[in-house]
Length: 569
Image (cartoon, rainbow, N blue to C red):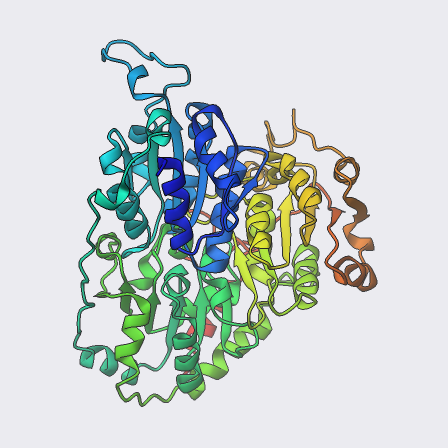
């Protein structure tokens, strides 16, 4: 069998029906084998980066390994950004790059290149993949495919890279005689939960921090059953937002630098924090972590290295979240937190994300709330990176089966549109929420929406600036808006959409009505709505550097904050 045909058959056996990519000379054999298959299809994007992000979106929505391919040289290097995104956000994607023929490799280390577009992509990708390998012998192809596919899903999930020279792809070989990869079964640890149960039972103000690890281990239902039983309040990281529906009364939403004020205050008051699959990074708990010194923190994560990476005093549990709940549900819990439940509801009512401290309306948050309230139960919201991402984090209404995708660890502008394409290829209706800066990063992928008639709605929150950095400049650089306002511009996005034969609408934020939102969302037709905000629009509240996370700008008085914390539970 021809090697490229074997690769396609391998993925078919793994129940993969879509491969995202961009054609090039060094993957011509592989793409030809895909096109000849009746089962598997190549989704052709406009850039290799678009293909990588689309594969990431597809994997995150389906929960399966996905595949992205590109040619050598610039095709391969264009995949590095989505590789890094998948690595930091633990998404299992198999990246396959073509490489020059083995006889074209550079023979001497002191020269830069022999073959046209020859690039050592494996060395570049190793720090941002779980595994990266060059196939230099046809006898190793089966073994390395099986190994890479296993590694992508084993333990903490993530991307892998297989670099395949063109002459290897076209070889005929009897793969039934090739060596195969054997993956040993490693059972999860049994842990003694008595101490953890005692801590939870004795806690007066417990809280659960939900991270991406809950979704990655398919533990959402375990978590929801646990919440139904205990009614413990929850907060979430950005990537943990869609694990708990907003209708759960004690769901306080996102914490952190740009989190909800009531969520941050609740976290600062809690005496016990159960952390489920979250990194406890600086964006979540701040640079000043003094408020966590006297708390009991139980940190559950599948990544042992991540558990060690913290100065906080905590109990660590090295398990996947589903395994942790499987063991926890066998134990008896006896908690009484009625006063604590009342307190978090009071905080939620007192400091809503849709109003500032003076009762003025936060228009961006109101718009996000209104749009997400009207979404279908199983829609996928793909937010880009910028101010709008934080407005989504603060005010998104999560439905029972809805999803939220965003670039968390890497924070890559240009993520949302191709990720939504991948999500829609899986069969879901997708809603892109982007800013004027982020949307221009991969704006060319609009072409796929029309070409494939994808059910994608696009919301651009446009304040004609790179608002996240502009807000930073306003705070720390005396309003010198270099590169964020000065020498920056955005086009008329509705006209750009029209050029791609997509219906485009422009409206000022204050003129956006409920009827307009209903019209925008009522069908599966692709529509872009360009919402114009004042250039000075800001994210509020925000933790300024050096403050603990309960002290968010604009500040409430120290007296008010102390009074909240002194109230008896």
